[in-house]
Image (cartoon, rainbow, N blue to C red; front, side, top):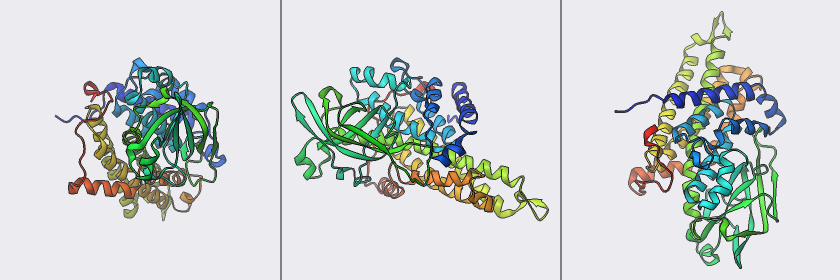
Length: 402
């Protein structure tokens, strides 16, 4: 039997996050967006609520919720503003869940526990100035030096890049395989901000997510001990693809929150804006736009819930998360555009939130795999050119909570 009802715990979590964003963020987000101000104190409150370790087991400092709960948190956060969900993507989805799966017990105690408790913020370093979708085109390297590795490279478009304490750094550890574009020559390392040779900065002039920290970081002859290698040498590409599956899930659920926010803002405006002696809620083409937002919201929520259900069952969610990410981000862009049209000239100003929704949602069709990449992936699965594994590596299942 299929049950679409949330558990009492999930509903309580959803309400808690909603109350948090309405009380702590919504009153200030317009100002933060205008000033491109990154309010780090927000994450202290998120940590107190257990959100920064929401689906990490309690034994590692987390709240012990399931993966559907992670999606619920992301949807609620991004319904307010994207910068809130972004931290869940990079800190939880890309970094902490990778540590949970691939990390040694020592690495989990040293890095995962403080991250799950929110004592440390973390992020993920894969994209470079000349390597985005073409992961194998990255230039970062690591060479052995006794019991250590010497890391060099630059990562770009990194969320929390100038804020995070801990970083996952992907690079080539086999020069010959790099020349042959053989991804088995890639490895992953855990890097701390205070390692000598580490530097970072913030990118300015972004179209959207202006309240968030998007930056870059550079490693120049950074010495990293062998025990900071995540997984085995040569497993970097495998770890990166695993991480991106989790990241796409958080992006999909967050983008669904944008659709809902656009719908809610449009409904509120349509019920109060009067034209020709009646509210525009009575106009058929306004109704059509709102109906499309409603349909898109329901469909995209079901898509990310399916991916979350598969993750809870210990199954691969690669295909489901890709489809959810592709559709939710694309439809959030459409919803934001229609919301602006419903608001008319008012929608073109920041007196209303819909113009911010449009600026914010545009990035999501690019990161965690572009819209075009996911289109091709879905076609390959449909054509039988790509096979999805039945089981997922590593992460614990939550069958009791599914």
